[in-house]
Image 1: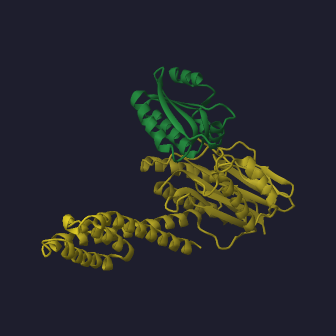
Image 2 (image 1 turned 180 degrees about the vertical axis):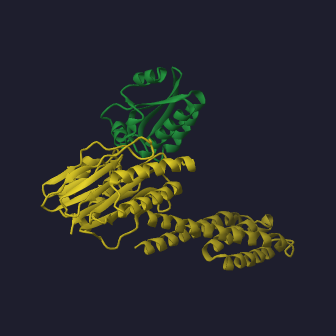
Image 3 (image 1 turned 90 degrees about the horizontal axis):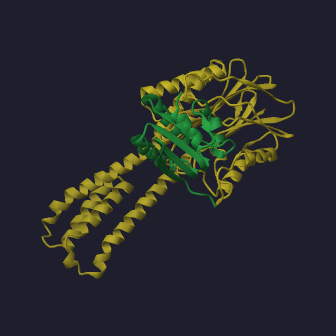
Length: 357
Length: 118
């Protein structure tokens, strides 16, 4: 429910702003409770400017500016001397305060929208888990704060041959630069995958792109990791290409099998890097192929314990899920990891389980 | 109890050694970057000593990759101490950075490669 989450986020922002305004009000009003008003002429001005900023933040300038102005005039005429001259000073100030409040609010909204739009570009939330002959269950948990953004991204598409290409990536670094780059890499992967370009050529192309971007925009993004898994249309095998990323895990009724081939290097490090695909045989029995980003295994082992959570703890969790791994199972795995960490994880997490339909 | 991340810079045999202890991630990234700036100001060679680090994430790897890039452009050098089998070595091997930035078992070994380049 991204819409609900957004509204809750907005409501929380307003609540915090209101709380801050009340605290400021109390702090500034305190002297008036213990000292005679006549000794502190004109002091209510700053208080009302604060209220004005808060009012503008909460209500917008249409209400915030007049509320501030009226409040200032009333307070100054009641408390201060030189009552009729004071508004000349405080009116422009309060109007300015109202405008500042509106800018803050507008900037906040814009920031929230940008983050949301970037995230949409990173993961392209799938309503329908059916991708070709596979059911692809995916989860994306953004990093601790809803206001921060990292560079995890993923996608799944059907190729012209009927093969299903699944990709998970992680741009090193955080913030808008990482997220923007991740959306570009994801779009490029998608185009190449739909056109049926081989996974190793795709990774090479993404490597060249990232190296070029580093030159062009003097980017602070040092590298990105990728895991590409292409499941053949006959569901008998998959091709795996890894660039510095945790390998996929095949889960069957007999347990888990982690792809043990040495991974290729992350992209964006060297122009001479190459990536070899290696085959993964898929059984006739039910199976699920799990791909994820390192955020899943880098939390704490217990709320006060050391990091990382590690693959050694993830594998039994997946084995215990049973196959095929469905919506409830991925949620249960995530819950276990979050519980061990003692709450939200410090980094983005992507967890995907693909199973035959 | 988890050990919080600590960063120390010292000058050894003409190189700057940045020693990391405990857990390092996004939260300590800026401190490591600041240590790099400090190190570059004193010498053209940096040794990242991760022997005392119990955990590093991609943020730390990123700082080291950026340092290597800077060294390559300016004629300096970068070496990494990460004993095989330790947590930092596992992360660095997975990312594939060991191809371009070899890992050393001890600080002495790393310092030797820096003093005798090529």
